[in-house]
Image (cartoon, rainbow, N blue to C red; front, side):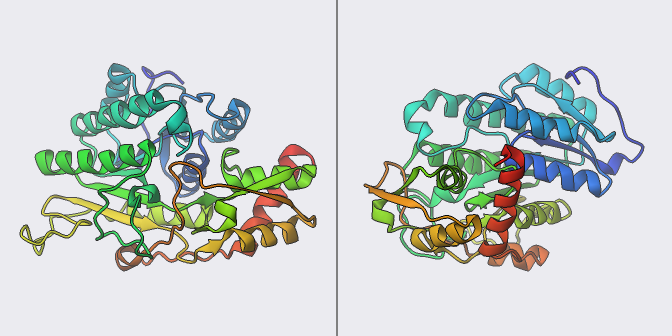
Length: 348
C-alpha cells in the first residue's frame, strides 16, 4: 500500500498506526492488535540494518490479514507521514520505528539523528495534527546509562547516557513531554529491557549466540562474562503495550514542581519500565541456551564494549499498578520457544 491510499474501517475507535511494523516488536504488536479486531496501518522502510529478508517475511505475514494495511516508507518523509496520519486519524499511534543498537550508534551516528530525532519529531507533528488520542512510543533501558542503583526505577534521574543511542531515546522522552505539555496530547514512553523471542533481531546477543552454538562457532562474552541482563519475552512485552492503549496518561494533580517525580508530570505524560524484573548473569544465560539447543558453547572472553552497561534490571511497579501487567514467561520457556522458531525458520 502507498501513503496516499487509505482504507477506513467501520469502527472509528479501532484504528491504530504502528511504526516499525516489520521490526521484531512491531510485528508481534500488529499480530496481537489484528487478533483483537483492530484495523492496523503498519509503517516500515525495511532498511538494511539487519537482514531485509527477515523484515520482509514478517511484513508478508501481516499483509495476509485483510485488516492490515502495509506502508513501506520512511518516517523521515514528513509530508507523506503527515498525509497518512491525518487521513487515518487513528485512535492511537504505537511508535516502534527507530535505529536500534548501542554499538552501531558509534559506527553510524547519522542514522540515529535521522530516525530517532528527526523521525520522532515527524511522529509528534503527525500526532498533533491528526487528532490522535494517545501516543505510545519506544524508549529504552539504555537511558539509565551510568546509573548503578538497581533495579532501575522510573522515578530515577536519567541524565548520564553512555551511548548516542541512549541519548536519542532520552531526547524522545523530553520531546514527548514538551508536546504533551503544549498540546495536551497523552504520551506514554516505554523503556524496554532486552526483548527476545521468535522473529527476533539477528543483531541481539541471544540470536547470535544461538546461531554460533548450532554452527559450532565460538561465542564472545564481554567484560569476561561479568554482566547481567533483564531478558524479557516478546509476548510479555506485547501484553504490556496493548494494555496501555486504554490507559492514556492524565494530568497528575499531585505532581510537585518543587520536588518533581521524573516519571510523571502535570502534563498528560508518563514513563514506564517494561521488563521481566529478573536479571540473569551471562553465564547462567549461556547454560540455559546450551540446555535448550542440546549443545555446548565454545566460549571466549573480551573486554567491556563501549556504550555497554554492567546490569539491567527493571522495576515495573508503575506499569503493574496501572494495567495489572506482570511478565509470565520464564527464561527457560522463552528460549525454548525461540530456538524452536530458529530451527524451523533456518531449517537447522
